Length: 626
Image (cartoon, rainbow, N blue to C red):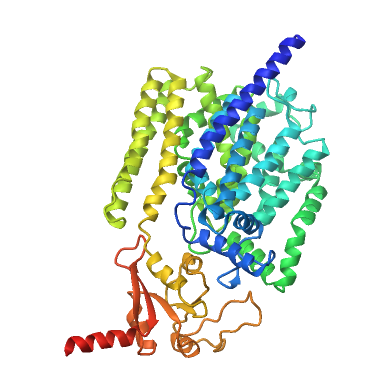
């Protein structure tokens, strides 16, 4: 290629990259930022995280995470630092609690484009980014004050740096030429290695050891496969189908090969990076809490969730594959064409087989590890969503460029999945509106969006207007996601009436204690602007005082009788199911001050009891008798 032609090609590529980044930013930004702060914090994790950051800021303590005046040992500190920094700039609002999740979600979408661009091409990267940014579970992570968006960001950053350090841009049919250094599947430039492990160390600060284990296992699995020396063709021909499968599965884990591969990943650099970046905070929090945080976080939250089902979050072997399909909607409609494309591309020795294998390792390792773990939650596998986007981006790119050997009918059926999904969503929203939202049925219109978009996409796919079909799917995904998350959640939030009770508490004297009986949501602590004690049903031998020798220790759990004796002016929160019992256990001067329906719980009321209301009620009844 002549120098002028090569320069022109680079300029065109640069302009294309800029245009793609603008499109991606507008696309993803619309989903992540539309009405981001309009809804109140959603129980239960959002208020716990936002409230923890608020309490740390009030104490001027950037080390020990505390929520509701108790140690919050469930998560490390990075999310709280992000939220605290936003609070300092924007004030304590829902927007500031969520904005870092949205920004990091946008960063993950950009990085997904970078990975797909390097391993496949820019067009596949653009499609992958659009698919990721409108997938349901990723959008939830990007709009919530939880550590998921942070973990996904730094895990993806580690993968991006590995890819940039190992691979050149995909340009020809020889995968060996795709490597920066022939025969080397790990970065040789130390800056990429340091950056990769530094990103993992930040992930350790966001979610714990999983931040190092997951990206390392993904890259390690890919290396175990790619570094295997080829076996002679004659040997393979002598094996049966079952033998071939067994050899393919177990050969990468032969002890010597496994150890050599692990050593090639520079494990000492990984360990030192984590110790230098994440280690200081873990040491400080361990010292400040006398080992309580480390014991409860490492043994309870990590080892415990891996070995025991916690909070009834269990599931079978199909839990995460099913979760992945539902969570990646709307683009999960392409799952079957994607599976067929992967099979054809790998069996034909496609130039994209490196990208496919890497994405499969990314997804397979994530699903396998969390399937083995006892406690299961849909959010656990969201760090592999960028890989899902890359596979779907590759599949759609191959289809629209007429390179696909998959029959047209499978793509027509795939996009028709939007119609089916829209009908199901509309029916579900009608039921929710009638049962829980006072007949608010306009939400069913959200389900109409994929129905109309699906009809267009099916027509274009059937008439072989493939690019138009993909544009229809893209715009449908965008409009559906913006409407659902930007406006639907705001409409649902308007039916949360607990503010009637919580505003009353917030405006009351800060010195008055609040206790709950048989019910407590974390949002009440945040919006009441004070800690809430949980009362015990029966006497507790831990003592009859509210003071603690350590500020992070659990608050004492005592009976209503004991609490009212220690705090004669306290407020009490309970439900209509337990209010009669609580009133019999409190002094006679207590009565109902406020009540409001529970959110999404039929026939359940949140009741606030206040001293003095009992006398008022007695006086009113006496007046009526007179």
